[in-house]
Length: 141
Image (cartoon, rainbow, N blue to C red; front, side):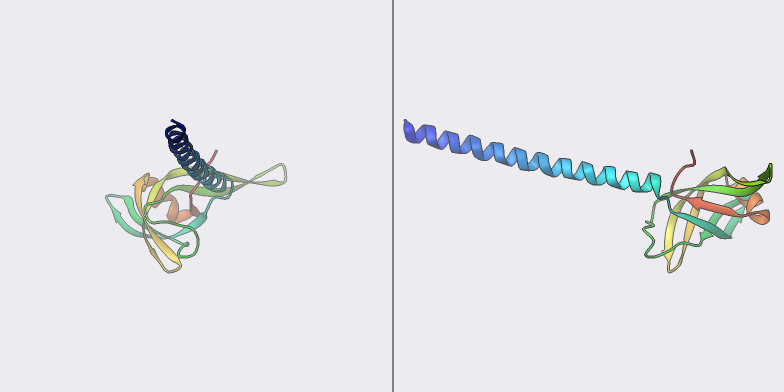
C-alpha cells in the first residue's frame, strides 16, 4: 500500500509540475504580447510615402514608403496613412494629422517598402501630390 501511495503521489506531483510549467510558459507569452503592444502603441513606426507606384481609376493602388529592412517592419503589417500639416495658431505652430486611409506592407526592398492600399486610395493619391503624406503603424488617437 505504501508503494502504491508513493507512486500515485509521484504521478500527481509530476502532473502538477507539468501544469505549473505550462502555465508559466503561457503567462510568459502573454507578457511578451503585452510588451509588444505597449511598444507598438507608444513607439509607432512612421515613414513618409515617397511615391505612388500604381494608380487606377483615380486611386492609389500601391505606394512606396521610406522604411525598410532593419526597422521592425513586417510583410503583411497594416499601416495607417495620414496627411500631416502645420497650423499656426496664436503664434504657435501646431501639428495636425488627418487620416486618409490604410495600407498593407506587400514587400520590403532594402531601405524602402511597397504598401498595397486597402482603404482611401483616392484621398492618398490626391493629398500625396500636394502635401506630406505619412504611414504609421499606430492609428492616431
